Image 1 (cartoon, rainbow, N blue to C red):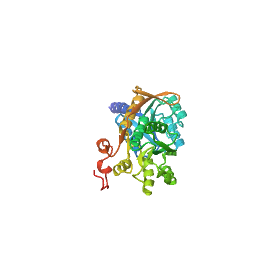
Image 2: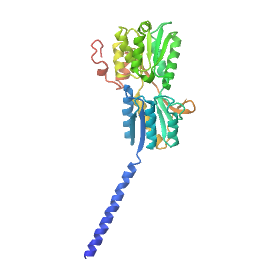
Image 3: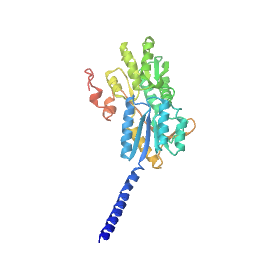
Image 4: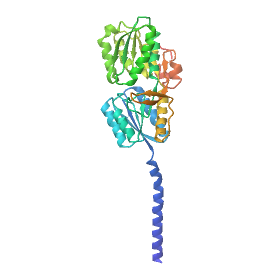
Length: 343
């Protein structure tokens, strides 16, 4: 009898082990969760924080994990981040290139390892990425140029404060801007390229050339962060509001400056839509699906499939209709502490 109970106990033990093995299978399925590596240039610029949050949220809803890295404007750090993603064998790498050319060999290495690569917002040149998703950057420049042209007379002078030459978008925005400006017959007094998008360099230029700046009619800034520092120096010299300043990204502070009259316009790029579409594309690529891209863009060696979104011009007149009604910024945040501006 004692032997019988020993055999029964052994059978129960073995059965329990079998149940444990069966319960472990879902964990193995969990190990197959899609892994996405996401490398940003920096989070100093307000909009990149929005891109990050929407991308991660969308990817999570689709069952993917996102490893977010911030290169803090350091090219070598970004290369190291991509190398780390390759070593971790992620399914997809999404990158906002600090410099257009610098990531070419690393991106090619990732693709050789079977990792899909999306160039996000800025094009990584000569890299043969699987997808480029951004806004129509020539259209961004054209919107800025049209806004400035409407405030100018023939022969008026314009200063262009652009981002770094290494950013492929800078040349596209510049092209669109100049095409509009030429139709007006305005003159570009100077074109300045700001390394690393460091807004303090733009402020230094304005300070060092304030006498000359005081004679011009408009300043095109590569983004709203640059515009903020330019306007700060103009204000210190009692010139804010007398020079037509334009930028892009529709940062909250830029929208505040527009309604108070120190910045004329900004270009709104619905980054939530861009980030959401990019996350969906990343998951689709990871699952071996084709992503529909209606356009292509030449990266210097290859026509990269290109998803291109449209930007919108924002001035004080359409601030509420475009920015507030879309929920991009709250009305009370835009008009805060401005008693002379009716919300």
